[in-house]
Amino acid sequence: MKFQAILLFGAPGAGKGTQGKILGQIPHFVHFSCGDAFRNLRVDSPLGRVFVEYASKGQLVPDEPTIEMWSTSISGLIGGNRFNPESDILILDGIPRNPNQAHIMEGLIEVKAVFNLFCPVMDKLVSRLQRRAFKENRLDDANVDVIRERLETYRRDTRAVLDCYPEQLTHQIDSTQEPLLVLLDIIKVLTRIPKRAPGADKNDSDR
Ligand code: ADP
Image (cartoon, rainbow, N blue to C red; front, side, top):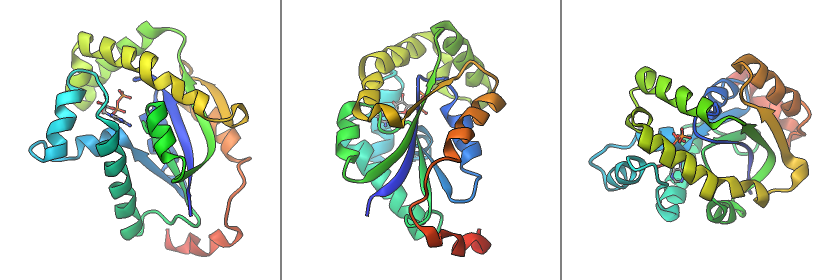
């Protein structure tokens, strides 16, 4: 059975993490941030080292270990009873991040909606990321050259992911609005998404 998924899509600094964390608090929605999963690895583990090598240059980690890490993490969520594939919807933040990842994940997820958190002014993203560097102590946000490279990686590799999904699934969300209004736009769409399992409510008392 494919996992039901919502994709949060957008350039670095567009607010995917902010929205994903909030949405993940809603019953039957489970947030998975690929960047957070990488940052939670031990830096001296084999994949942790690969992550630091690529992320410190503003580049993407190669696809194969990325998808493997994603799969392992999701299995962990299922094993820990934090994600029930029958009744819950994954909020995927930062994955898939290029058309090849989208292709590999085709057989694994059923995409119910894609939210494109667009930002017409790139400079706004740069200043948001620089502010985040202090709040979250992220090294890849602290250096303006790395930020520029991440935005370039987004433009070159990631943006094309949008073409992998039907247009009617894609919802354009203005990420320059304040977070509450971005959330409101997303939630309006989410309320219209049909749930897969009609008996899903039976687990409500457990959450
Ligand atoms: P942002 O969207 O602000 O760039 P993330 O936390 O999503 O930050 O990602 C941080 C870094 O983690 C990326 O620059 C990249 O090196 C790595 N990364 C995250 N998700 C993926 C992915 N799906 N594929 C490859 N690399 C990824």
